[in-house]
Image 1 (spheres, rainbow, N blue to C red):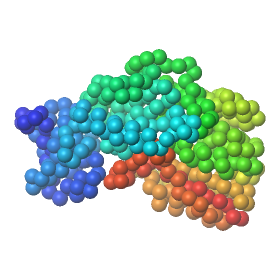
Image 2 (cartoon, rainbow, N blue to C red):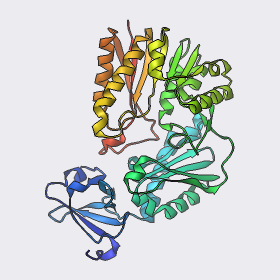
Image 3 (cartoon, helix red, strand yellow):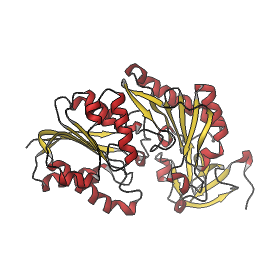
Image 4 (cartoon, one colour):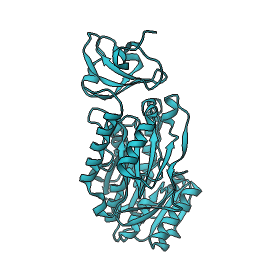
Length: 399
């Protein structure tokens, strides 16, 4: 193996004609695009990326164990503490402009991986503390420096790590979880537009809450007034809490997980919605909708990921068509449907098509009132459409 080039940077040389995505700003280089690497020693090594003709394309870090062999971080600056500090300040400035605290919200995303040009790093704020995920070899390599930056800049009451995503395994890294600093409150309570949610950062999905759905939960609260509401795949009851507070009657929450139903009841009761808490039901959502004969003024479909990779897309689309067909059948005339996919491999066009097919099969006339996505504290890189993983539709049943 060749020694590292001057400055300690490995050199990643692309095959002829494979530089176009990088020139367009895409932050990933796949193994098939790589001609050779010089000076690589270990996963996470900083590198400079070159086209076949010798042009410099940018800087990133390498991981020979991953299909994404290089993740780029900047055009003109190598990875390291100076760049991480600059990127963190940019991310914090972007969140400050959102002024979430003015809306009585203290749970939000501070760093969104590629969306904040820090591939593999996720940082979520929950009240006074932080939950972090190091999901790539490069971020793992610089974890000490990143934690020091977060501590210096934000003085968190606690830092908890949830680096247990499948993405980490794909990087050849073992899962890591646990308290890194401070003391975790029991219970940990986060606010969202004045509503309170108990957050399980230890065993909950992702980092504890689906923070990306915040704005869509607020939309459900506005649509719920005077409507009967069915929240499918309710998880910890976020949509249900906002729907009940918005005047939905009744609000029914369905999930197959016992833990999710218990958490939904707790959150509804915490927000003074005892009637809705009593209507939380553990059931398979597909079976529930097949057996349900009621019509609803608002239905929320926020299922778990149906496709984790490209080879699962065909089956996932069948699942999305089936679940939307069942929901559309149960909509009252004039009723609204908020339907989502969080499968990165399923694009918005394909998702929209199967939802429209479901409506046609049910012979329902539907209006599209809007396309939905993640809240703005979950930005995605304009050149990295894979970052637009959450997509949704806001539909109204005309007849």
